[in-house]
Amino acid sequence: MDNRLGIKTIELYVRSVNKRVVISDKDGMWEINPVSLSDDILEAGDQDLKIMVNLKTSKVQAMTDDLFYTLRCSKQEFEM
Image (cartoon, rainbow, N blue to C red; front, side):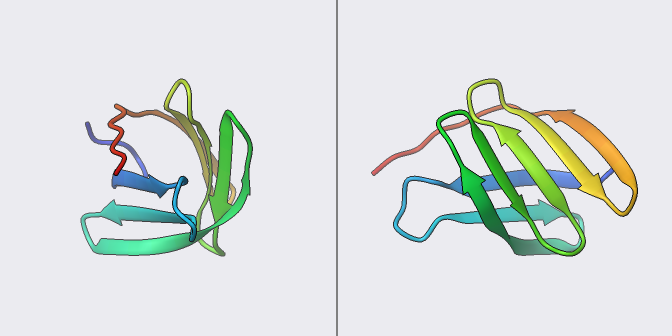
């Protein structure tokens, strides 16, 4: 599904030793820094994009510049 930010995927590596958040859009992939993680909410961001992901509902709140977006994502989980 298209969204106004152009985000295609948000990959969360929250159970690994090095927690990571990888964003992909039409221009490629980049990593943003996790800021905080609770049982339900992951916050991550850099100078261009800040996101808050509800891990239970897959609802994403994203902020860029002075704009605020709410996205609904499908959720896939994988553990090894």
